[in-house]
Image (tube, rainbow, N blue to C red):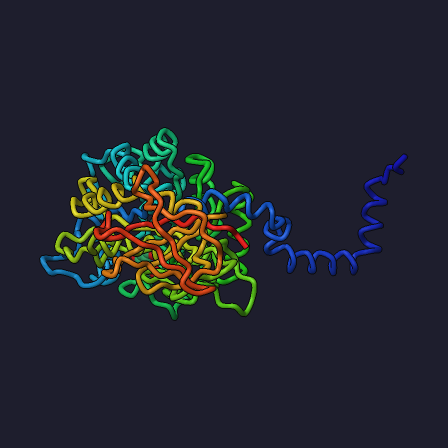
Length: 466
Ligand code: FHN
């Protein structure tokens, strides 16, 4: 029978053991970060990450007020990425607010966007709930600088997207900038150099407590369940790794099975995007930007984010679009190294995804309709890089992504395993291709004269796992 301890006795006990209590609390405070991560077993983590690891391909959406100037300010084309026009154009907050008061994307159709992503073979969508300029694309009770109170549009864009994503089985995820050029307790006072890496705001902790966290609570509790919280803007001097770990735990406490990128903390090594190795940093996956790691990264979860032209946010005159070939081969290259591909679109101020983006996504969708088996749920190449293309794997299967079709109709593969069967993934009849072992660690597959797909033809090898 447990002995009931009276309140005063509690006080006396606390008073007697006060030193040890303080020590325990201090230890806990050091260990507490990341407490939730610590309590998560490897199995639980694998379970939480599984859908994301299998998804492999997602849509990034950079959309907001910056789509109105679309790269031009006071008649001058402003260089750099479109969503940074407030910074690159030295636009005062009050001036930029005028664009927010014009934001009225009447052609926005959430179902259309979700369909475009789904038809392209994308399994999740990461949209900018709030970018560095601070404008909020949802009905925030914490801010007036949002789609309901400042913009004439007065429709909750994130709500409409969350409904359509649920309907079409697409995971909705939110990008959210820690840096905020609009909020007085954040970087607004730094005008004209909002992104001044040397400055701090004495009231920044107030921004975190009274604005950043309450808005994250709105996003995660009113639009969820979410797939990923994709943080950014963490490089500011005001942000620290302990704050990153604290925010990681805070978000996890709101939705325990959510996934959080490594830009919640300070681990990222610049655009290479992977974590510095000197300590345990907050976050579940690395975020290479506009680049693909040279090799696979065994045991590391990572996602390469990339633009289709040279800007994330819409710029009316940026027509430097990547080719379909580059986009398809990037997807195979990234998957062959065990990563995810987050490909960006920058919708217009009217709410339309640019035609050039839609056309490329349709092309990717056609390829994925035939070949998605060689991307979804695959793991990195066990046979390294190949002169003619890339390789992805599943238990008992290798998917050879042939970019350059050998003219001698002989596809040479460095492989010791026994091959039970080889065929073209595009060939529904799975007609057997002839395989000859040339050396104990090399085979040759006899391939047809014409490559079924000029950009990337997938040859499947059913192998005997060692
Ligand atoms: O500054 C942002 C940029 O605007 C864009 O959002 C990219 C996307 O990953 N991230 C930052 C630059 O690293």
